[in-house]
Image (tube, rainbow, N blue to C red; front, side, top):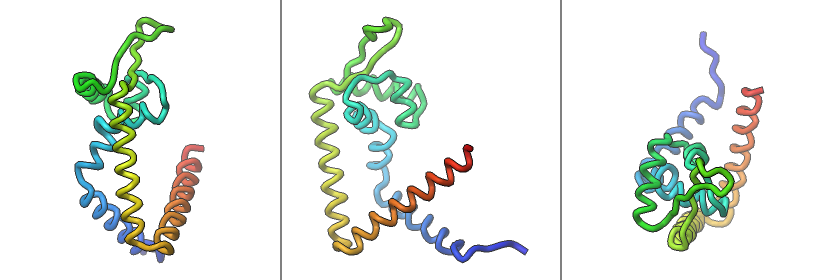
Length: 149
């Protein structure tokens, strides 16, 4: 006999809701999280140059994908690649002014869109959602830390 938890049905419903959100957001989110915008956002977040390897790790994409993204961003004038002053064999990627401006603008747009969506929920539900998502993140982090120990 299989052990079941009273939370099994809720877990299935949560997965379905999260998939629905992902489907509704679609390609826009993929680009924000794994494409050109992910690279721009990471460079803006650290406020300094990063190596292609660091960008690959932070964006969770292959080094080949990062190389293609960097080539495209460089052609658009959004990033520069240069040899490191500390190690001439290493390459550093940095935002141009245009790249920083685009990253900042897209971040503001994304936050405004999210704020608008939270506004549709109302004060109480929006605050409760943020509180619960914070608890969920903490619980997941605890499980991951426990599994790796």
